[in-house]
Image (cartoon, rainbow, N blue to C red; front, side):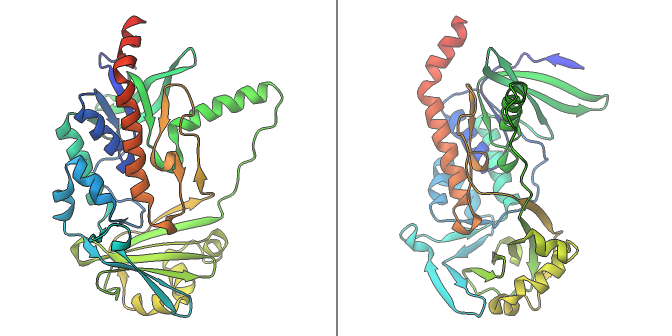
Length: 349
């Protein structure tokens, strides 16, 4: 069934990762009416290097969650050490990125949950276990979301009009893909050749480990044939291991992360040492990767993208979390600058 919703919002955001949630908090703090849609129920695990660079702490302070993040029990990281396959290394101090500061090793489960709770306290309307099923469009303008939830009687579909919609769904770009598919259909009708789909060339794996011998206060990066991986402490005395390997190597080892870890990652001498006695305390998460790079930040009128939906950068940079928070702030600032005019235009129409 379809139920027209009486709720109207200034901004509707799909995706409650750091990009979407930080934008929601920023906007709510200036009095905007914000809807935040999330498919999962938080807290939830997430494939990520879980390296929070020192610059992120400034964002946490502005968002009002710095104390919560620091007190969550994550690891204080004073340096990142890069290890070649044979064990040669070079160290980069964390304070190079922000004087007097350290990086933080904290699970996405903890970080994202604390950001989401802050969003709720700031006045954001949060819908968890909700699917942003469709962009509402009128005369070529995106003007909200059709959202699917579930109750005891089955699926419930509700429309949520909004002046601006933000795609913060990460690499999947769930909202932007709808726009892309529309454009592809139009091109196909005109006889234009559609783009060929690319086969993933890389696969990423992640798990929390116990008994890893990572150096105290260090994020260690290992290079090996076909990829690289990172190991650093997180809360609870565990270490987070996240590594990227070629899809060909994954297929060759029956897509088993333990075998890939043993046969590929541990070709690095330092990784072989630090991971010799380690074992996974969580389930392995995996995702295929096909490309890195920038996307269109405004794929349609009324639609903005933030975080990985706007630009999926190589995890090697260690700046993924920072770019998510930065893009959330930029989007919020732009919307805040034009919010009064957008409201007036909507009232006039």
